[in-house]
Image (cartoon, rainbow, N blue to C red; front, side):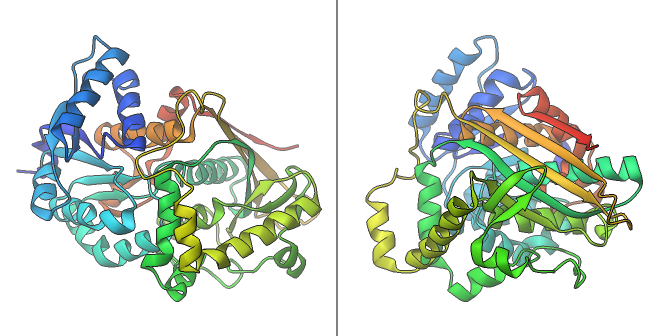
Length: 417
């Protein structure tokens, strides 16, 4: 009998009592349909019981989730994966604790979601488990939180809009973090600091290539580098977006967006010249150069072990993060411009996308991964048509984006005059 037709649950949240896991559970409890069959999972039954009791207050009329205890051991996780259609894991850093979960899902044909931004680890997992996941039909979608669902869905939305309006692809898509008010959690900071302990600089450089995860070889034109002055200063001016500089999120999001390019009809939907570039908005060029320099020097500093050790003394610990009170004024907004691949340089046809969320970035991550789970469990998407393997948030397409909009992620797309 088909594995996906016999599960006890539609979704299990593994790592439910952690910082991001709790946000994920709270969104499921408060916002997903009451007939959605789900469970919380982790190592401590006592902590899980306390979580379920807390969740009850959010929606007293909803049946509580079931409780499943599981450790980070293969047999435990295989048994857990066999109970559900979709397994969400929020247990990080993923380069330390994530592989055994992916292996369990890939081998059992269980659909998988995580919220990592660890490009080197995702790259390695694709190399090791993509063929197994395709054979079993497991839809594996890493980086389905703030990294990299918003960027990936914005790119897909713009490409689709330009294709429908003009019947052409996109030559370049420029995205910027327009507004950001947030503080990272302990898990996020620990991940950044420990990546340098786990991977060589050569591997970090190789996997950090913008096209490292594309399933289709890009053309030489697509791999074009930024102008020399921009590479030196980090600053770019875009009439529709203002003065821009390097993005902290860009290195994580860009390989995922480019993977989506290759997964959608082998690049034909997005276009043969498509390139994604990510920035953040700043007030002036001098400030932008300062950020560019600080980021470059910061990366060099992180390569030194004593620096990482000192930084760990001053950050939130894994599983900790800003309180809800401290996060109540958080928000994020992205804006992006897609330049149509038209032959007339004097007629720069373009479309704009704006995506905004009012609230904690970790609440947004919980919304993204929870809504992706119900999309996989109940809808039909390109991800299902592709039959499994390592896919991207954009392969969940319109059904996923529609669910996110209903959950409070404001999104608009329009052609520019």
